Image (cartoon, rainbow, N blue to C red; front, side, top):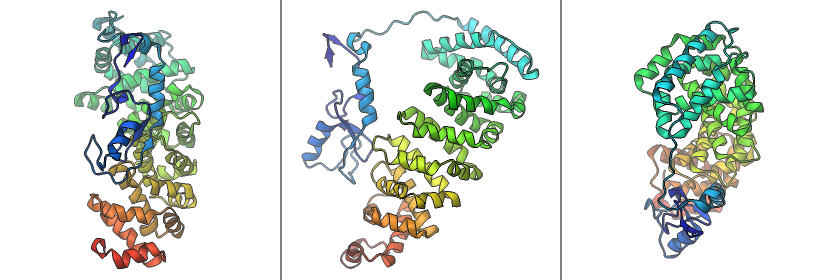
Length: 437
């Protein structure tokens, strides 16, 4: 691609795997790979029935527009850097604002100050936010800086989390955002096993139980913060919930946490990062069975159903949506809401064989749970209306896993004896070579 006679570097995921040009109309196949519409249509029109990138046989040749990628490409092509950046000219990095010794010194100063605050919540240190700001700027300069800061500052994490419950220190959204950003810089870099053990066993984590305002700080950020802060908090809650049982117990008790995380998913201004972060956090919380009903009570099924029916979802987001629906379908409240919501069941059926093997397995598991395990008549009727049995028949003939094949077989047995459709009657008499019974 050339603009104003200057060559530019094109992100690899903006290029069509076939033509290697920037995609004008990106569309995704059922394998999850995205191509430019013109190129993939030419490939399919040539009689091919495989995905060019993976060589998987296509279960369907339907092309799903990838609106998210299309928007990203549009933003990129309209940006000033695309208009002016020459080819092969690497951006020159300014010398780091801090040396490694200065970073270590700042970390030591922060550690001393945070320890004083954890021991005495009334103790105030006004220099903490400015020190954190300097370290954040240092981490953003180059990737190596972020890795070094994460390694050198890993021991600060329990203190930072405990300090998030101090209203004297975290008194506004601006300071809260700095703390959350700093925590995520440390958490999103690989941490050595011995470092992780030290973090988990640190006595500072016990202060999280008494940090009454930690949850309030998180809710304040989720409800009042800008999009970037809300996404960062969702990421922080997901990772810290896995790392600290105290955090998981603390945040899972409050219904407002669930409602705010679901609000990130249902936002009118669709944001893939927001949805991904929120879903990851909710899945983490839903690992505890008692939390699944809380997700349902806060309108989770309706939000997930609406999101699932959107055509512009990425493959990972679709997989997470279905995984979360599968988890909530294991509780009575979840099953009732899913069966009551025809849009939800219809959207689940549509994702079978359309997104990925993982998504298909989650979708079939939900349908099997509703129709076979619990025998819900409403779900059975909705699956029939959505042409679900035709998809299950095709799935039975595909290269699916043993578990999916068995669940598909159970579903067919249910409908074989209850359905009066001509389609299944013909299946019984004329296609015995693929009978699963």
